[in-house]
Image (cartoon, rainbow, N blue to C red; front, side, top):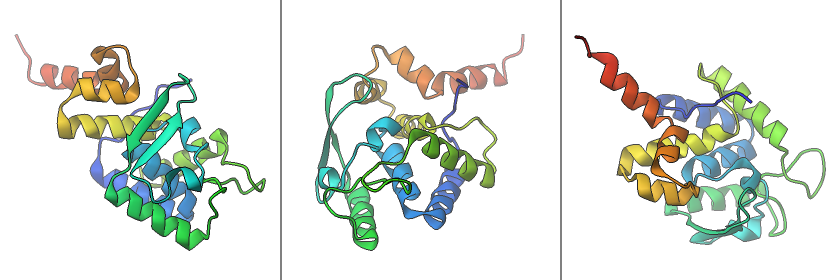
Length: 184
């Protein structure tokens, strides 16, 4: 599997959001959940309308670690979710990101990967992109805003700060910046 990167350019993030929203609202919703809460795509695909509609927190069991999580859903995301549910006329038992192939089925991981790659290519993103790009983008920008690796480590469930920094690509940025003007 290729290493994917976070999207470090805010303009590219906005372009991807617009592209996905124009393509299909469910893809836009997938991006919002991945990049604003930091969910893995496997966890996004399990969310049903009733799990998240009109709720301040998302309660879920992590697909990878099998641990229970309670993550806040901020007011901006709640508004986007409510608008999406209303526009798409989703029922409480519907998946928030449904598949087009089977009624009552979530979008597949392979379709999510395809969608993200098409959007990234269309928007001129040159770094490798995959389903973890949403989660890494969340982590990268959360760290840039709060500078709290311990908090981010807890959100991600990582065992050490160094793993978290490596995961979101901050180590690469720090190394590059430190060597940029270094000359003996």
